[in-house]
Amino acid sequence: MNWLAFAIPLFLFFMGLEYLVSKIQKKKYFRFTNSVANLNVGIAERLLDSFTVGLFYFVYDYLHRHYALFDIQASIGTWIGLLIATDFVWYWYHRLAHEMNVFWAVHVVHHQSDDFNYTVSARITVFQAAVRTLFWSVLPIIGFPAEMITTILLVHGLYPFFIHTRTIGKLGWLEYVLVTPSHHRVHHASNPEYLDKNYGDVLIIWDKLFGTFVEEKAEPVYGLTKLLDSHSFLWQHFHGLLEVLVAAYRAKGWSAKRKIVFGPPDLIDPGIRTELEERFLSAQAVSRSAANLQSRRFRGYVVGQLAGTLLILFALLLFEASIPGYLQFLTALFILLTLINCGALLEQRQWVLYLEIGRVAILWLGLYTILGDPMLIVLAYIGALSLWAYFSLVQKRYLRLVYG
Image 1 (cartoon, rainbow, N blue to C red):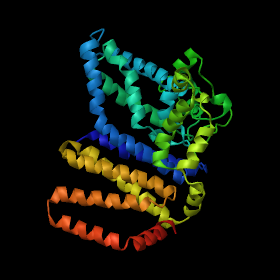
Image 2 (cartoon, one colour):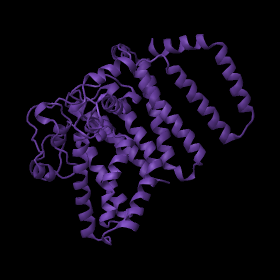
Image 3 (tube, rainbow, N blue to C red):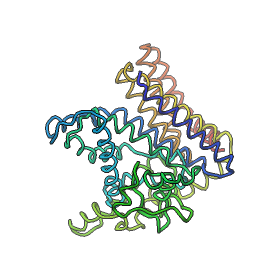
Image 4 (cartoon, rainbow, N blue to C red):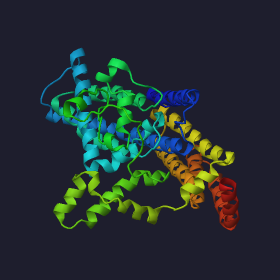
């Protein structure tokens, strides 16, 4: 069994604990739609990371075997050195992710939520993980073995989870050494005085050394400077890339295009996102969703899908070594469709029924691959024929049931 799968219930436990603490403090730190959207992004990252982690390890191992400058062996000193080096590289990756559009286009997903709680720590995409791997590739070239790097990345990746909270105040002398919740609240704020500050992940010394540190004083306002008025799983992942592509396409000359891609985010016309939203998003989606959230049936349906997806992901990660590849693929496809489905539900999309049909089809196919019973093919054919015959009736009843 893959014991790392138990990170899922562990993190969910702390999210639930933070929710209870916020209730005791009589603070509204959690909103339903934001929490669902945050967890959807995190589920996708954990799912896709299970397929890419081997590739990342191969990259580190290949670079170490062929290009290592030094032969570094594991010891207490080298482990500490690797932790410090990892945090230093992270600082520069994180800083450039805010200063260069090509990196900001994928890192922006982490900053979209206008809430700030433990669910926000889940807002990391697999694209961002790939970009970080490019930066961390300097570590095996220095001479750190792949085994040490992957181990330290697991340890290094745990700490940032606990700094995404508003329930913890300032921590005394630790504020001078570590990145604390107070420091990271500044980083996620859209207040003008807080923009592009406090990039550190574990140690705050890099920000103080390179002049990017700001202390939390005024109450932070969280999210992007132009709020992302959408809960769509797909839009949250790809709007940044689309904005960069459109801006680069419209720029005159290769020099101007290159400047857009590698320049800071403020070079991109904010009107581009408005144009893209008018083209791809429903203007009344968020307002309709807000009205429908009063329905317990709707909220229960969304929570049920989210809980089921988390359970399936946990089982997939826990027993991945004994699950055939084709079944892993079908399970991953089912999870991704469910995440898109949850976003479509929050956006009140009419085409959500097609996703439901797709999920049912994957379930049929999964059952057939497991049981190998030809009768399932017959039943699937009969079901599809019945669905085709009564589609309009099914559609109306389904949408009325879900949306009211």
